[in-house]
Amino acid sequence: MLSIRWRTAGWSRNKKGRAAGLLLAVMGLTLLAGCSIMPQEEEKEALPEIRVPKISQKPEYPVTRKTLELKATGSGKLLSAQEENLFFEMDNRRITDVYVKAGDKVNKGQVLAELDLGDLNSQIRRKEIDIEKTELDLKEAMRGDAEAADSVLLRKQQLDYELMKEELAELKEELNSLKLTAPYSGTIISFTAEKGDLARAYEAIGRIADMDSLVVAVQFNTNDRDSIAPGMETIVDINASGEYKGTVKRLPVDDGGQSDSGGEESLDAYTLIELSKLPDGLGRGTPLSASVIVQRKEKVLTIPLAALRTQNSRHYVLAAGKDGSKGEVDVEIGIQTSTDVEIIKGLEEGQKVVGK
Image 1: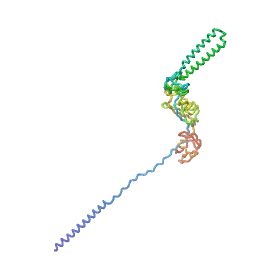
Image 2 (image 1 turned 180 degrees about the vertical axis):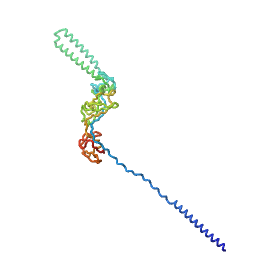
Image 3 (image 1 turned 135 degrees about the vertical axis):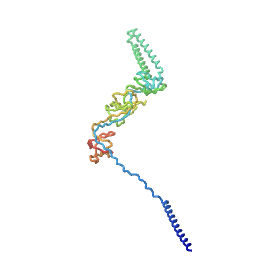
Image 4 (image 1 turned 180 degrees about the horizontal axis):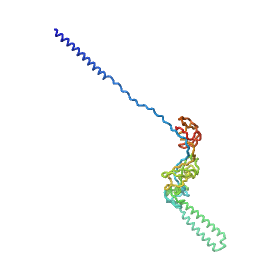
């Protein structure tokens, strides 16, 4: 009996030990599982570095002396100093022949086109015959009798003779008016008339120019033109050729830009500029630009226009002191260019002003 109780007691102790171990193992697994279920601590977001922007320093400019020039600028082209329209003086006649076209070079007196002559040549021939017959009759009468030379009949014959000569001159003048001729040697710029067209008296059908006498023709706006005068210095920039010095020769005569019904450009609408020497190889119509110096002041106090401040009618600057201080200073200004302004009063040479 004793041995049986001992085994039972030992077995009971072993059983309790195994149960405790099993409990500890279960608790350990539970803790591990709990740790894996719990959310992991969030990583902290990396914030960007905040940089304080540097405040830009406004530029400072010294008050200096320089020469200021006011310029008027315009654009234009090379035109001929001698050019004019071509037209017939006769009205309501058909053009029977055209002998030229645009670009042709012609000589003075060359026939360019003709109107229908009708029987004008026949009239001229008949009149010439009548004059010759009358002239013979007069000579015969004067040789036959000296007293007849003073007779009334002879006087009438003389008057008829003079009248026929005048009529012949008129017919020849009419014949000349039916032929359009070149007024001088030059180049035909344009010619619009064609054979069969009905001519209108003094209506432009073409234009001729002397290409050997080119001039610089420039158009300025009205405000600038009021300040331009003959003799002023100019700089002419001819495309693909360079800049050339010149002087204003003549101001525009009118504002129209068109001098006739043909729509051709007139020199009267341009300011003409004279160059000491015109470059070679240029032709009529070459584009160009020009600037005229309308005012020049030398060795005046100036500051950049970017440093001038304006409030209503007040002009002032922000002057910089030697100690770094800055303060407003009222100024009186003179002429202004696109980059600089003249200072008449308020600043001295060497001072510094702050830009805007």
